[in-house]
Length: 316
Image 1 (cartoon, rainbow, N blue to C red):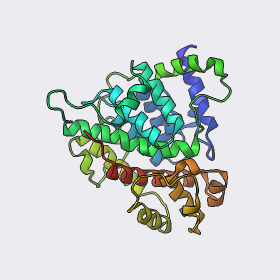
Image 2 (cartoon, rainbow, N blue to C red):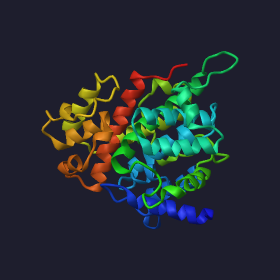
Image 3 (cartoon, rainbow, N blue to C red):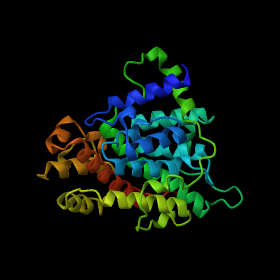
Image 4 (cartoon, rainbow, N blue to C red):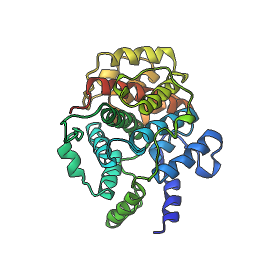
C-alpha cells in the first residue's frame, strides 16, 4: 500500500472514535490544524490517541507536547528504550490499543514486545556507571507519565486495536507491518519544537529537573489542564481520592465509585483509577458535550498520571 494511501486511511481511522467527533483533517483550522500538521510530520501519522483530543484545542496541544517531547524528540535515551517504557506502562494499565501500537513500533526498531516484558519497566542504565543520568531519568519518566495519561484517554475514546475491525485476521500481520513503518523515529526531531503551542507554565516537576525541555513541556501542559473549566466540585473529590491512592487498579467491580452522586465525579474517578471500566452508561449519565467530555477525561487522566508517577517512580 502506498504511503499516501496509508496516511489517508489513518486520517479516516479517527472517525471510529467513541463518544466524541474528532475534527476531520480537512476541516481543521487554527491550533488544531497546526497540531495535526506537526503530528504527521514528527510522528509519521495522524495518531488517533492524539486526534481524539481535537474538540478541545488546548487539550489537543497539551497531549501532543507531552508525547512529542517525551517519546519523539531526540535525547539521551534511545527511541527503543522509550518504546519499552511505553509498552510496559500500557500493559500495566490494561490498554491493549497502546500495547499493540508500541509493539509495532518496537518491531520497526528491531526490538520485540518480549524485550519490553523482560525490561519490566526498568530503563537501561549507563554501562559505565550502572545508573541513569538525571536527564535520561527525566526522559523515561516523561514517557511513563505520558502513557499513564494516554492509556486513560485511549481506553475511553478508542477500541482495543489501532487496526479497524474491518481488517480481516488474515491481513492483520501485513497491516501491522505497514503501520509500524510509519512509527519509525523521525530524524531531526529536535527537542523543544512543540513548546510554542502552549503558554509558559509555572509548575515545577521535580522528576524532570535534569532535563529543562521536558520540565518546560510538562509545566506548560500542567498549566493547560489546570486552566480547564472542570467544576471545583469534581476537582476537589478527585484530588482528595487520588491523594491516598497507591496507583493499583480497584478491580473489576465499580462499587467503589457508586457512593458518589454526581455523574461527572463518578466518570472522572473511573477514568483516573480504572479507565477500562468506562462504559456507555457512565458517559451518558455525565451528559457532556464533546469538548466538555474531552476536557473532563483529559483533566482526570493528567491528574491520575501525575499521581501514578509519584507513587511508582522508575527504578534504576
